[in-house]
Image 1 (cartoon, rainbow, N blue to C red):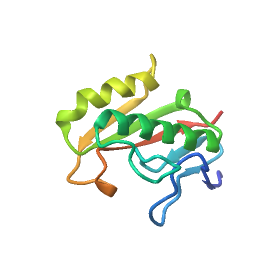
Image 2 (cartoon, rainbow, N blue to C red):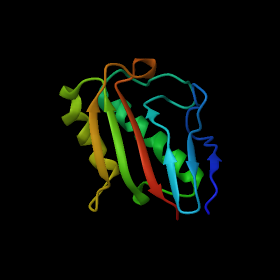
Image 3 (cartoon, rainbow, N blue to C red):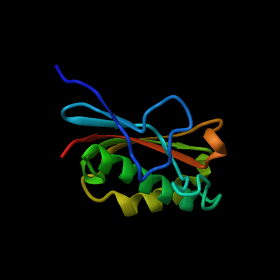
Image 4 (cartoon, rainbow, N blue to C red):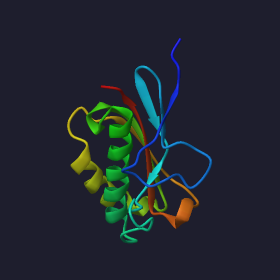
Length: 128
């Protein structure tokens, strides 16, 4: 039976509640949603969807690396958007991070995100 292990990701923003950045098993890692918050300042670099998407994916990359994985090992993402009208702009940045053999993905508009973020992205990935 697999055991679960909490992942601490120093290169990503600290959790803003009682949850872990990620939890991994022997073969997989499950991340918490990542906002477009700069890990150094704890603030958004900008309010626009593209800047926040880029930072959220950089934060996701840092969490995955801390867990022993990478963006290339991602098998599923979920993207939470404040406004589905921003889907196209988010998708342009998302395509910079994920190439052919894309992970499965769901994208939904939500009523509100933590810190009034524009986007939050979580992932499930295989371990290296």
